[in-house]
Image (cartoon, rainbow, N blue to C red):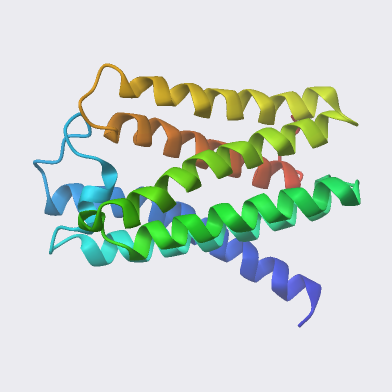
Length: 193
């Protein structure tokens, strides 16, 4: 395929992933209006009969989307091949963990919780490592990713005041969307950081 066609497919997929990322929680909330992130984790949608399919499909789409976007920005923005290898490795591991989190229901206990925890830790490390690699040549540009990674890590402090980890997950997911959208816009040369 030609490069232009691939770029259009990737752009369409990324935009549709953002739309799915906005609509799927709204649909799940409509189907389960009693959901409260202070009481339930987001994975609770995966075990409810009327929202489980939406939850599974959404996480599969997100795992592919963050992988595809991550690989593209690594290739375009990171010049050091040593950093590229480690970034791709951590990104691949995080995407696989998110995929497994989606297909393994929450009621299977540790079989769901371990990939979910690994995703949160590894993807956070990926963004932080990306910022460090980027700061080697552009300190200001790398600082954005380092700060976002630090804020993602600090979102785990929201586990302290709430009985569930739903609020921390919502904040963490917000930072994932924020970072991916900003990096995609920067890669498209629509904004400068």
